[in-house]
Image (cartoon, rainbow, N blue to C red):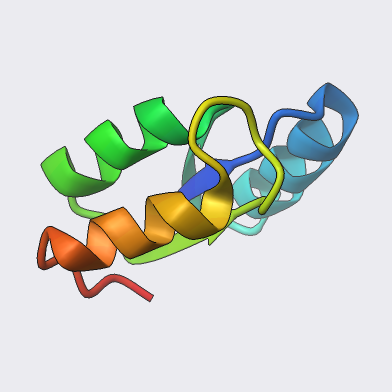
Length: 74
């Protein structure tokens, strides 16, 4: 499974990415909402996991923009 993780806290991000990759998943980590919006509308992901409080575009606004662009990834 390919996941997009949007998390700006380095410790949290490292912990989650390590767990996901050890479980056999591919995980792309982005640390702000703007970069995540670009990636989510450009690349195919099975799941998007977004922190609500990230720099630039907050996680909720990023997900709303992804939905408005027609991306239906959960």
